[in-house]
Amino acid sequence: MNAGPINFQAAKQVPIARVLAHYGVQLHATGGELRGQCPLPEHTSRESRNSFSVNAARNLWCCQSQSCIHARDGELGGTVLDLVARLERCSIREAAAKLAEWFGAGEVVRAPVPAASAPQTNLPLRFRLTGLDHSHPYLEGRGIAQMTARSLGIGYYGGPGIMQGRVVIPVHNRAHELVAYAGRSIKGDEPKYRFPPGFYKSQELFLLHRARLSGNDAVIVVEGFFDAAKVWQAGHRNVVALMGSSLSDTQAGLLQKHFRHAVLMLDGDPAGRAATEAISRRLSQIMEVEPIHLMPGVQPDQLAPKEMNETLSGHLRPAKSRER
Ligand SMILES: [Zn+2]
Image (cartoon, rainbow, N blue to C red):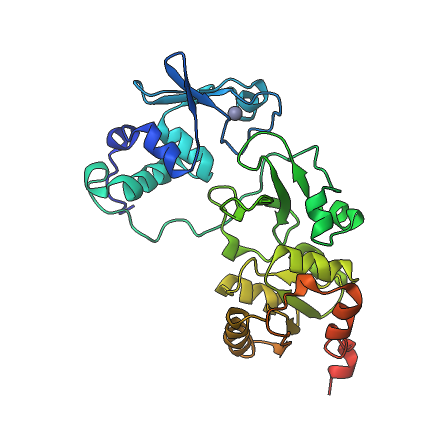
């Protein structure tokens, strides 16, 4: 209601090259236009590596891949507003507000947009990445067995889009809906993890949808995707990852809602120890917490199954024995 008037015309005129640069999308000049791989989340075609083109003079984009057009309900392309709305999976109004925020609020928006807009929620993805390689050498190097990779849907993705050439890890919400892929770089390039634009890590716990079904009232909380995969591989289905070393209010709420007891197993480095203390303190106000201190420099994903089980044994007593 009291949203400030947004100058859509001005937002539409933010140069598309600047918008693409913001997302790290690189195109090449061919025949008077810019062309390259389509950055849209709904683009899944593996053949069309050059289907995305930009007309800088008119400040418009288009992707000619049939499947991509189909996923956009027949739309060939659009303005920078449409582009940002698709990349962020948000409304045109929100896209305009984002453009204003990134590229000069003064020019684009006349009055500030109230911060109290939509809550941060992750919408289910409307596509699936296919053709994943579950036995890629990178996974083997991290000690992830093919069966684990297959079960968790983790694999190397060679198709087009922003996840190309990365090991992708599907992230589901508590309702078992796929909301993101995390794309792990495998050759040391940055960023180490790439997420779809508009994905809020803080709103999810990796593997919660499975841990919930384990029937265990204790949950093992780790930092990273590979930590969680290794704990899972060692036979513990009640594991979730924070996808980082901080705990959001939403994540704390999810832990409290689904479990009675949390076993915190963060990295053994100073940052992990500091996080363990901070998170223990917070969680202990809402549930039982048991921190595990790994040796300095040790991360859960480096533990062999036997070490993993030795480390966890004693922390995962059957639920009944903890009742008074
Ligand atoms: Zn496309």
